Amino acid sequence: MNDILIRVSVMLIPALLAVMIHEVAHGCVAQKLGDPTARLLGRLTLNPFKHLDPLGVVALLVFGFGWAKPVPVNPRNLTSPKRDMIWVALAGPVSNLLLAGLSALVLHGMMLGARWSGLSATSPLLFVFRPVLYMVAFSLFINVNLAIFNLIPIPPLDGGRILAGVLPDRQAEVLSKLESCGFLIIILLISFTRFYSVALWPIIVRIIETLAGQQLPVVVNVMHFLLHSA
Image (cartoon, rainbow, N blue to C red):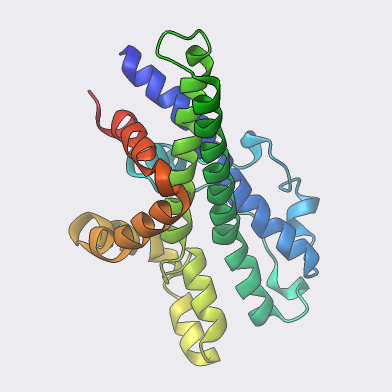
């Protein structure tokens, strides 16, 4: 039970931050492109209660992908609705990749600092260092996972909105009709096929390997503890 509480407490903050930054990024880009809907509804905030979908957070912690309450965007307020929606949709995954990159920099800095300071298993600083290290490593993992997952080209995921923006109008309209059942399609695709392991996981691993570099074993060990230990 203690291990479970430790894992959830370490994973919760990076997971919440990942989904909140993702949604705020959508709203900020929409605001820049002429749609103030998210700002007027108070959604351009890092207050978690404005964004959280409880089921989405549970899915994020258990499966590595999840969702928050979508930030409302009114395409009619955008200067060029079809083109601008591409940028609004792209903002979410890009924000997660940037946060993953920042997490990787912090991870490298922490490990370098630990070596310079001669941090040992008996050091009192380890009590603070270890949970922060775990949070940073999980932040790297969850943000890459969230970014790639959201680029699946099925609405209502960001990838579906991006694809609708580049397709001709007739094909984009057909694709948009999938939005009402999009999550069901995605759940079935991930649950009953090897789509995640074959199509997404190799991309996720390559990005994490690139960002983590020499600290990849640290990330692997942390993820093993957080996701697989009893």
